[in-house]
Length: 163
Image 1 (cartoon, rainbow, N blue to C red):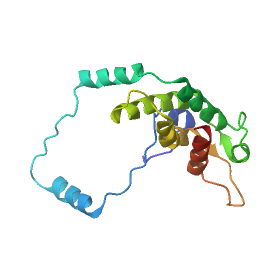
Image 2 (image 1 turned 90 degrees about the vertical axis):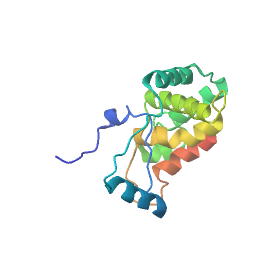
Image 3 (image 1 turned 30 degrees about the horizontal axis):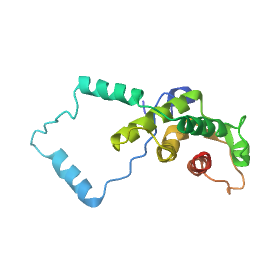
């Protein structure tokens, strides 16, 4: 019974970790009213399976420039305490992202570019998606001083440096 934290090997299988904030007052009011009434709610599909698979294939076919590939590799490798030149990462990160993190970041950057009507991902996509793609694939060591940056700040700093 209950929920338990997933082991790191299972967390690594999720493409992104996205934190969803609470809705604003008007949205929460609509949720409250529309989900507790007697009217049947009809869900309309946004995509059928064939269209979804076509879009997934399109994302995978999107070209990625060498500058973006190099930025992803640099970011993932700099986030690993064994490979980094960053003093904070060496001191504070217990375990860094696996190669799967780079794959996730590459796919997410391509999808973000496509959703924004662009033909290829940019460094802006890498910076925007770095924390959602890497954050759940890393663990911090205990910092007794309490003065160290948090994991999200650390990842975002690394992303700015490689971009």
